[in-house]
Length: 171
Image 1 (spheres, rainbow, N blue to C red):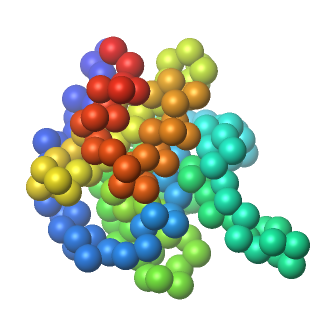
Image 2 (cartoon, rainbow, N blue to C red):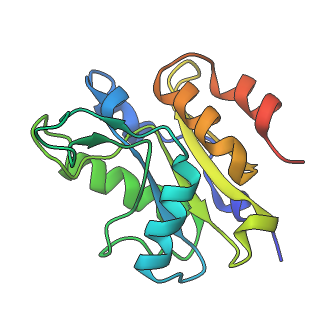
């Protein structure tokens, strides 16, 4: 069976609409499933992958206000047949939910995908669109324990995607 990343385009010029997008450092990476995991399982996996990266913003008044690093994709779009389909859906979803007051927004420049029911052993995919190289699509597999560090670095713009792929990507 071919690697799921082989169906991805080399670049995603439709991401140009996000060039002036502000506030993405507060948006979570959505987690899609390529293997039909049920939504409750995907939600639990998202919490596991997020680790300790969730930041409470509500204090004692509203402990439910949290900035998440990873969330399960919306139930209406969570199941995708391929990484390419997930990328297309992710771009459409982000365009529809890119308003500053939209609580359903996702980090537009990347997402995660489960490609095997035994994700603990087989990893998860991280797909990113890089603006440093005009809309280049980069995809690589991550160990579950590396998702928190890698995604936080991308979202916070600490390191480039290619450097993170070299550091965290599974071979």
